[in-house]
Each structure stands twice: as C-alpha cells, then as structure tokens.
Picture 1 (cartoon, one colour):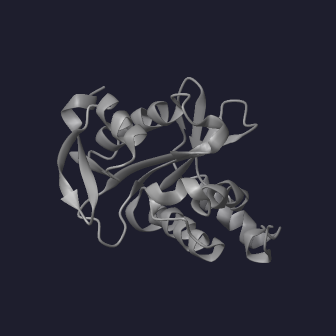
Picture 2 (cartoon, one colour):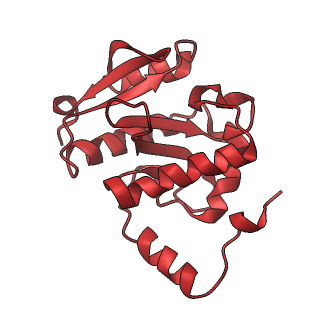
Length: 187
C-alpha cells in the first residue's frame, strides 16, 4: 500500500526535487544504471526493509522505520555528497536493488552497503554495482577507505566483500567490519 507521503505531487516542489536528483552522479555498469532515488523507489526499498531478508540492514522494520531509513540515506546526498543509489536495469524497466555510501549514527567512517530485490539476488548485480561505487568513491570522491558492516551470518555479503578485495578489520556493534582500500581499485 502506497501512502500519501510516498507519492509525488506534481508542480514546483517536484521540479525542485527533480533538479536536486539530477545533481546525483549517475554510474553505469554493463547491466545497471545507478541513479538517484525517487519517491517511487520506496516501494522496492520497503519490500526489502520490512521483510524477512532485512536482518542484514537492521530490520525487519515497520514501514515507517523503513521510510525514515530511506529518507536518511537519500538526505546524505545533500549533507555529505554521497548516499544511496537505485540499481536499475539498463532498460529502466526494473529496480534491482540499492547500493550506497552511507554514514549513519554509530558508524565510525563511510560505509559501502548493498542489497538487492529478491528477483535479482544471486545474479552478480550487487558486485557489479559495488565495484562502480568503489571506483567513484576512490576516484571522484578521493576517499581512502570504505568499510562494509556485515552481519557474521550473512555469508553472501561476506563473500561479496571478499570478491571486492575487502579484508576483515574487527567488529562494531556485533557486525564484522570489512575494509575496502583505495589502492586496490585504482582506475
């Protein structure tokens, strides 16, 4: 169910929102376009965040909690110059998931995170998207490291972090810290 606050209202306010979103870098991979989030993307986000697969992102959440989380990650673009991207199929037909450079309360440093919608899980798209974001983070943003906070039981994300070249680097609040280092992703 889409609620009123989840629906765009046409007019000047939407024009401003569209202008802000147009400033978010668009990244391209072989199979994806990583773009700014739109209100319509919240439904896919809520499906992940409110369901049983959400334990890796602090859930499952209520729809209101998912909305707050989505808004925080989107708002990072205004405050930090990075945030969440929507992983959209190249043809623009489907949302495959989300990838982000986040920095939430309690985080010690910027985080690389990823999660896919159920139909796109296990197809290598999170790896593809995360690689593009690492190139952006270490190239354009000139960050030196990123971390991924991963639930120790999340074997798929641990394997993905390894494929990306990350190394274990301790624990924080029950999550493993996986460190991504810039030199491994030089262009």
